[in-house]
Length: 311
Image 1 (cartoon, rainbow, N blue to C red):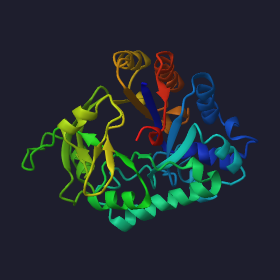
Image 2 (cartoon, rainbow, N blue to C red):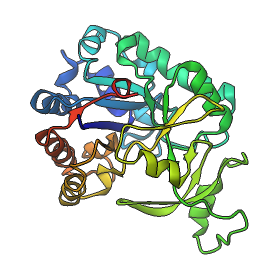
Image 3 (spheres, helix red, strand yellow):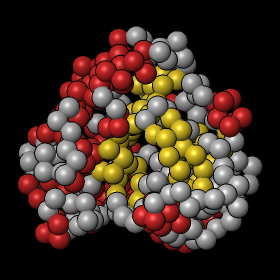
């Protein structure tokens, strides 16, 4: 059977809305209502990767929008639990900034960040709603100590990067100062360095962490449910998606998915913030992009899964 996996990163604003507005149901919120409509129509499952708190730099509400998960009420807990068969929450990061937050994270820092989010989700949404089976770290790269910590708290599979790693003495002077600074902020661990991220939606240099797999390992798992098992940490590393929906137009999304309909596995993701009209980079066709992807895979016999169903 062919399967697909769908996640949304950077979630926090819809939780703030629910906490402040207290609707009768979770699905009175437009964001969750849209996702539920896709579940009802296509059987879609989705993992929402959440921040612990908002950040004023990207928040349309600025400092007035300050919110963290401890403020989320538990009055919707039974509704979360009742829908956990298709709607789950998972750890992503403390907040949207800084970039590359886990590039040289210590064991204790990683464990504390993860358990802080996990414990709040347990409190307001129940244990069944929280996902350990697959984790997408903010900006993807995680230090070796961070990977050990994630394995110890129960994470099974960590999203992996792949691509050509540049030589350590490579000339990076062609990069803009801003991009070079962005790449190197917080980078101290020897396992981290610059790699070339090349995919249908991205062509740029980025930083890798310990969870970077070789081209051979990527080729072996590409378009399948297979993964790479890291012997030192016990974690499974998998490049979860080929592309991110918010970086492409619906026509390109349709073309990319259609060309992979003979594959065993298709993965795609997006980000929460582009749903909101007040966000500076709002995408009016945000919902069309998601439904385009979900509709095509569903109409072609793909089953929507969480990673605990395929690991």
